[in-house]
Image (tube, rainbow, N blue to C red; front, side):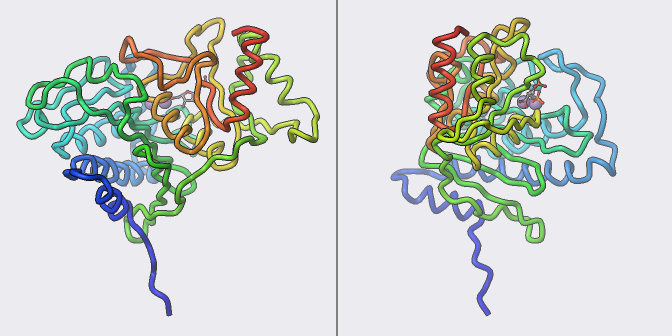
Length: 338
Ligand code: AHG
Ligand code: MN
Ligand code: MN
C-alpha cells in the first residue's frame, strides 16, 4: 500500500526558502503564523451557525459598514498571530482606522508590515456562503528597531513581497504567492494541515465568466455598460455569451475566476466614483496573485500595482482576471468612456 504523499504548507514554505540565498526564515515564519490564524478562523467559520458568532457586533467599521462578529474575531486572530510571529512591526487592517504598531522588542525589529482584510464578504457570513481573508506583505521602509510608520504601508503594490488569501468555502484553501508563481493549499481537517493541492496555478488566457454587481448597471460608466452587452451577445469564436457569476465575496469570485478563467469587475459608479474595493487590502494582493498566474489587474487605465497609495483606506476601481478579457474590457473603457 502506498503511503499518504503530501506536502504541507510549512514544508513548502521552508523548501522555497532554501532557494533564496541568505534568507533567514523571517518571511517563512510570518507565513507560518498566518497559516495558524487561518486554521483558527476556519474552525470558527465552520461553527458559525452553532455558536454565538453570527450577527452584527454593534460597532461600525471605518468604512461606515456594520461589523459582524466574525469580522471582529478574524481581525483579532490575525492581529495576534502577526504580533506573535515577531517578524511583523505593524499592520493595517480594513477594520481599523489607523495602522497598528507592535511595540515589543522582537516586533520592533521585525522586517515586515502586513495589510489585511481579515474577513472579506461579511454580508455572506450568516447565509452559509463562501467568505475569505486577504493579506499582503511588504518589507518595511522605516529602520528596524523603530516603530512602524505610515510610509511603510503606503507602498506601491509592485513592492509586495508576498500576498495571498484564504477562502472558507466548501473546503478551506490558502492561496499565496511570493512572486514565483501561485500555489494553493487545501486544509485537510483530519490532520489539521494545509496540503499542497494546486501547484503553480495558471489562469486561462480567456474564460467565459463575467462577474460584477449588475444591479448597479444604471450607475456604471458607458464603457462597462457596453462591455456587459458584449458579454451577453452570441459569438461562437469567443465563446459568447459568457456566464454571469457573482457571489459578493471578492475572494470567492476571484478564486473561481482564477481557476476557471473569467473577469471580475468592480467599477467606479455614479455614487462611488472610486469604486468600492480597497487598494491596500483587496486590490493589490489580488492583482499580485492575478499577474503571477498570468492574468491582469487594472483600474481601467493603469496597472493596479503601479498606483501610488495616498491613504490607507483608498478605494480604486478593479478589473481583474484572464489576460485577454481584461485587455478587451479596457478597450471598451477607452472607446466608450470610464
Ligand atoms: P468586505 O466584506 O470585506 O467589506 O468586502 C465586501 C466586498 C467584496 O468582498 C465584494 O466583492 C464586494 O464587497 C461586494 O460588493 P457589492 O455588494 O456592492 O456587490
Ligand atoms: Mn473585503
Ligand atoms: Mn472585510
